[in-house]
Image (cartoon, rainbow, N blue to C red; front, side, top):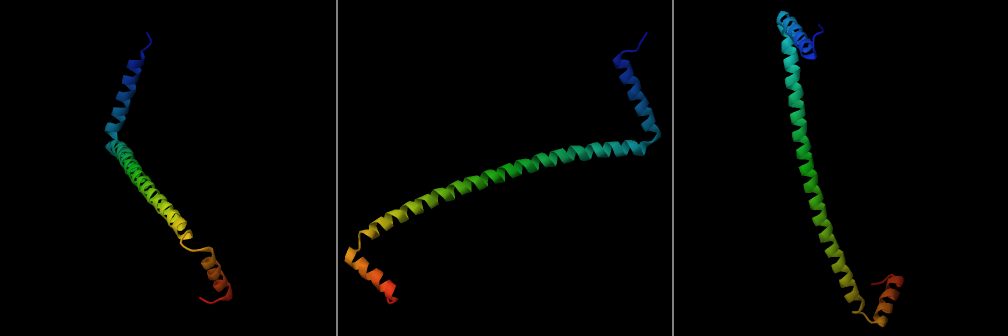
Length: 104
């Protein structure tokens, strides 16, 4: 009768355990590698979470800065509009002429 998959897996596992009993250093290396692999995945997941948090804070800060910048530009354009109406065209012509002549 042919052995089933469970029996073959069991025989393979028993053979592996018997081989590792003879060489305990190999078993220690395998366990160490598994522990390092688990630690690596854990540390990478924590680093990824931290990086996502930092990027989110950066984007939130940029949104706030651009909102403030928009308010500043809007305020400057309103100020420019008010300043345009402060000078009469004659005064403006005098200022331009003085600038061309190089005197204040």
